[in-house]
Amino acid sequence: MTIIQGLILQTNEAGFCKFLFDMCSLLNLKEADAAQPIRHDPAPKEIETLLFVEDDVVTRRVYSSYLRQRGYIVLEAQHGREAFDVYEDNKDLVQLIVTDMVMPGLNGRQWVDLISLHRPHLKVLYISGFTRASIIQRGILGAETPFLEKPFGREELALRVRQLLDAPPSPA
Image 1 (tube, one colour):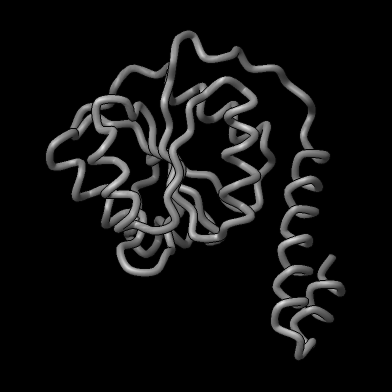
Image 2: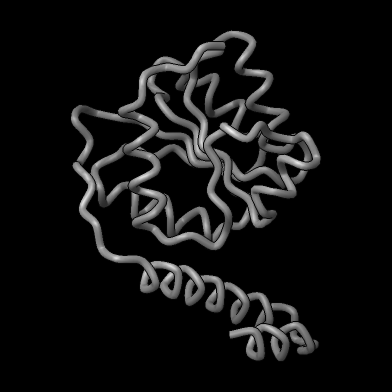
């Protein structure tokens, strides 16, 4: 996979390069799923709404589609500003936010901090290509903050979403 991505990055054809890079991203997701044992998590117990925020369109669509197949209502946003607007329009419905950490404009932590002023107990799962250790070391997130390191499998995401939705609200 690394060799393929290296060849793609050396290509001068930007559109073709982007297409192939997106396909490699999908293959990485499938490899991450294949490496995990298959576990069945329960379907949503009621109508549960998630807000999935990710600037990479392929990643966002793949994970959002999978969560919808699992029975969740999934709202999507491409960056922090859009996420803030989508959240404001649906704040009574959103039960969990899954957000990338690094995005253009407002990053995941910044936009979540803004809405936390009004809804401090809202459940959030942060995702990033950076390691948990580097995020904690930089003081961006605490050690107990829900976090998944990319790449992760769809099943792993579904299980973590279910765990967070089932968990009692944490203190502010």
